[in-house]
Length: 218
Length: 295
Image 1: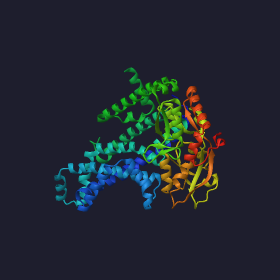
Image 2: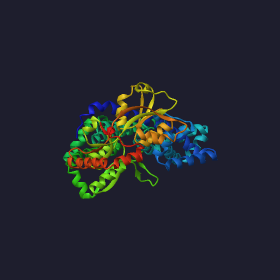
Image 3: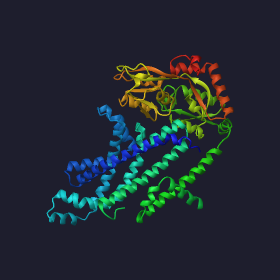
Image 4: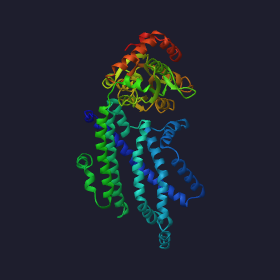
């Protein structure tokens, strides 16, 4: 094994890792927000919306991520929507993650005892306040481990977007490999970078969750 | 056990110094599992590295013994190799590969590869030879080249309406190219810094990106562009200029002199008995000019 190429490649790997981090940051924020709205809509919205969300979840969870990505990047231009690779990647990742996390957040909402809502309403809180201040924090706390797992999975899944020329970590690895022909060493180093990234991401999510949702989050 | 612990300790120092300071209480399990997996990875890697070094034998003898030659070809590379109506691969490269297999009196087994994985495929002995390998200095360091057998040039292709005459006109344009191929390296070298080169995994994606308008131009080999683009009436794509002319070689691993000689002999025979010219007429729509087979 030879690692002589590594010093010259550190910049590329760092650039790729930064793009991966950007992708997952946007996906986490947008995807979580979307899934809270989706889960709430699926429980309390009008009948048509409930059915639309159910369909969305089924379609996204039963088709490959790569196909969804290709549809957005190669397919949408024929309908007049042309997105940059990075935007197409963010959109595909957010839509894909939301389909899974709608179910996760929904499970949390179902797990909060109805007495909580009833008591809050009896105390004079408006329905929206009840959802945001009483039900949602408890729900998120319950499903937090499942949510963080899904986010980490999504970060690993982001390797797929190298296929549409987004310059993220896997793309840079492929480039280095194609230039140096040191496939084993390149992917070995990149595997370690992914491992470090997902460990750091998990730590960050747990720490952030503790701060936002209180003790007991893991 | 001692070695494993040592590996863990080394990695903690090198890669994840921040993790340890965070560690407390109930998260202990996750991190110990992750740490052992890193250790396993490091040990596994070391073992695998040794195993790869050990694999070194006479490829020609192996091929004759197995009765099969594994040939790496592109699956989306018309007219050299692409799926025909019955989904089997056909084309100029396939004719040559079949001829080589027949000459060696073995069965032909084609393996679909991509521009980026094919050299590792060859180095890892997943394939014995590669078709359509253009010569480059970087490649010569890791593989060997047998005789050139096909004319090949690399062209910039764009819509008729766009003015592109030379390398300077590539500035500020988005260009699709197949990552890790000779197209990629020659374009990267030639294009001005402001050109936005988008690298895809295979020829299909390159052509898709260009046709769907995700990129303004694309850089592909001669007839790869011509045959696909003839069907695009709206875009009216045309060849703008040639980046590079360089014949395709057959690629094989270094120090395989017996195999190299066998392949060279087969190509020479194919050239002499007119079979190569026949294939050229059939697929490239032009008689073979031996001058185009010189580097």
